[in-house]
Length: 173
Image (tube, rainbow, N blue to C red; front, side, top):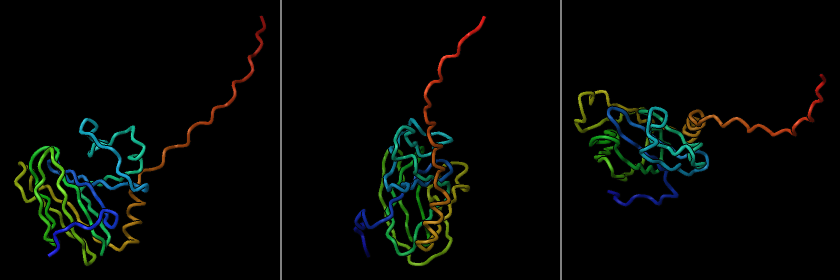
């Protein structure tokens, strides 16, 4: 049994933020750096609270109820909850970890075969608890990279190039 997490530089790091009744999954973008988060920025367009002014977060990827990972790569999940106690559970991986509001709890695993599996909440977290179901997809490295590319936010439009002011026009009376 391995209890020590792998070195951070060898692992895929993912943030999972639970809320009634959704799994918000946050991946660092192409720059490999997670954008800063703050609960004050949480809302329908930013379920993990990405700081809109942080350039590191502009390319981050947020998926709802979908955790994709490459096969044969250690994965470190940073777990937190917005509202109540949840229990992040991937039965096929024998992963189960409670998530407590205000805390970030780290867990890790390494999938050995590809496939589509389920994420469940093993804590009775409210009346809609039965709907708190996510999808755990283990795929090849190539398929994972293609999925990340598909999920990546569109790049911002190029900034307008300022033009020289035009010469003043003569007025006639």
